[in-house]
Image 1 (cartoon, rainbow, N blue to C red):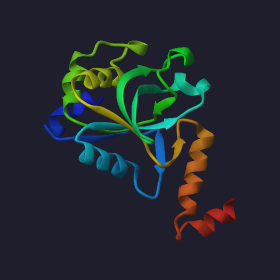
Image 2: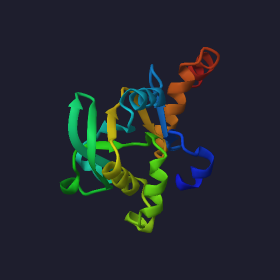
Image 3: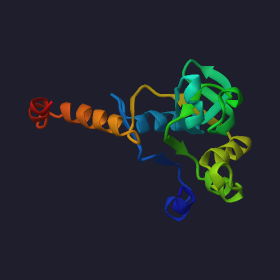
Image 4: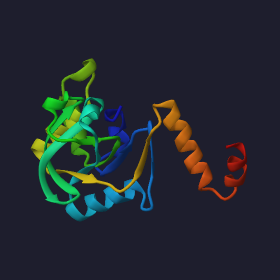
Length: 171
């Protein structure tokens, strides 16, 4: 799907926001990543630390910590077993990438599930240019889970002055 955007994006950095994640934060998540991209001049993936039993649900990253929340990424693995994970830092679906990723995806062979995985393309990108991970400060909702979707809907509705009274009454 990302490769389909190549002709529209052209030679500009761009953001990817996966639709099954709702993210709430004081500073928008994409803004946090764009700031890192601009400051560091490198592609950046947003990450969160997950329990060992959840690493098989995500693309996982590993590398060298540059600061408490920033890592230079040198290894990415799509949905590994806990023993094969390079860390417990998962990519839950926010990225700001250079257009170099398009060529990397063109060269990426189908991987997990017989599909071309963005994580595998990112591994190739990390070999060609700097790739960073940033542990963003957010509240994340995995809306692929129906109960979490309901939780997110309520949380966002309760933040809106025009909806909060009615939602509180429903609850």
